[in-house]
Image (cartoon, rainbow, N blue to C red; front, side, top):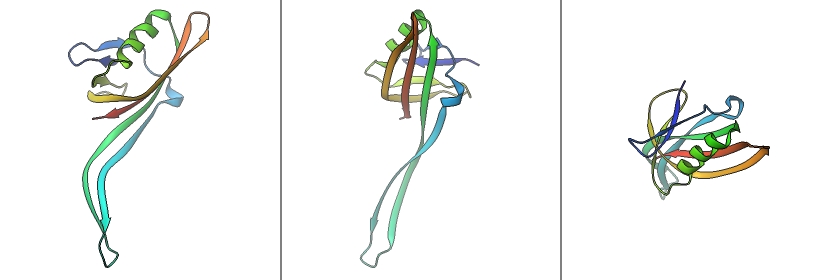
Length: 112
C-alpha cells in the first residue's frame, strides 16, 4: 500500500503508519437544541473521518519529509493505507527521536 500526504497535487509518499495504533474514527457534525417540551431537535450536517496515525522507526529522511508536510499551515491531501484520498487538517502532531537516527511521529488528522 502507498500512503501519501501533502499539498493537493504535490503529496509526498511516506511510509505506511504503524498498524496496531492506526485508528480511523467517525466524527458527526451536528447541532441540537431542546424544545420547550423537552424534545431534542437535531440537525445532522455531515459525518467526517478522523485518523490517529503513528509512524515508527522513520529514517531521518522520511522523518524530514513527513514532518515538513505535517507542519504546513494548510489543508492537506491524505491518501491513507486503506485507499481513497481525503482533504484533512492536522489537529495535533508530535515527534520524538527513539534511537540514534530513528524517529516516531504521531498525528491526528481530521477530514475537512
